[in-house]
Length: 483
Image 1: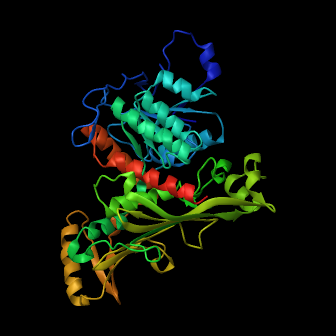
Image 2 (image 1 turned 30 degrees about the vertical axis):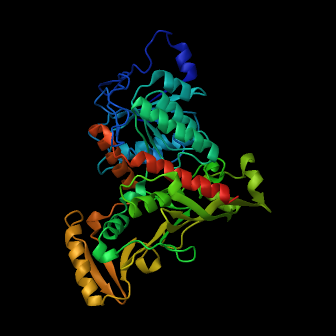
Image 3 (image 1 turned 90 degrees about the vertical axis):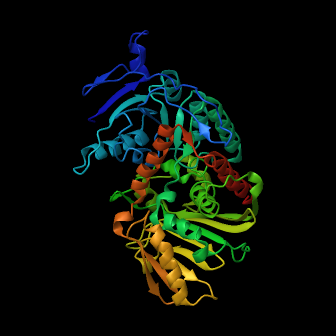
């Protein structure tokens, strides 16, 4: 593969014992270990904002065990402050090969090609070798979730910043380790952050903006279990296209002991959005959460379907515990109803095998306000494109409410230019220019930009870390109740 230099444990043993690791030359770049992260500044300012600094002004990526395609999407484009040389530590095998092939595809594409240079180490001691060599300052984690929390803890102990794909923990036992990782990250003055791409979906961003306009939305309802104030539903598919190509999934993705159930995986996005939209920039606490109900159920996957997505002609041994009458039962579905600061929210995650013709993964979201409901739909009527609607509640004539909505959009257009409203019977559709829409793959670049901004500024908002902890507390409590 072009732009890829590989090492293994056996290669290292043949090298001179005193040779400095990764002293390689490629395409004019001299690869060397940067200085260790400096521990400078107070761990937490009085406001609670975490402060930190990079000893090396250049961000240098370390990719660890990239088993999920999300690992490659962090590198979907280049970033001015990120070194093009990326060090990859992983066991040899199809997960690594798929990752490197995706990066090579980014480098070889005709439009806006990337220039990544992958320096790869393989061997059973890949993680320990990374901790010993530390050729970068930012660890990227996206893959099999069995060891992810241990990777996170090891990285922050070593003084590395961490940008991790969700979920950062899939069991209550892992959540204990995650909380410890956040504590150590504060002590070490490094950032630990998970990749919440759904904050960058344009209809969600405008839904959040409108929910903060009292003249339009009013106040968030309290809600009940039968009629929640907030509803978030995400429908995903095992078989789908990514970047225009059929997605090949690893077999372990279908094992909830390795990937995590929907309750602790995709639900991280939905719980995050409940917090981010309904209580913007407010520091939350675990005591703000009360789980009312939780349940889980399975999606059947035949061997033929499994082979189509994974390339495996039989179910591996670790999945046979979930096979019933020749059909794999994947417990990827989950639903929880809970209160956050007294407001009732319902979160649902559904996994189907494949989408309907012309369809894709979908998101449904409703915020009930005292003056209007803000609803995102993404069904066949919307041609599977996320569409935001505003439904005014009884009490204000449509004409008067329409003027109020237009006034609100006048202000929102300073941030989101070109956004308008179109009247339909009983509701308004928020019309969003295509120029403002980005896809799932592009959202990873936007999250990375945000994280790099935190690094450049030397601090992160005070609410981010406590609210990540509350998010994982919420899903773990629901996980326990669902059993």
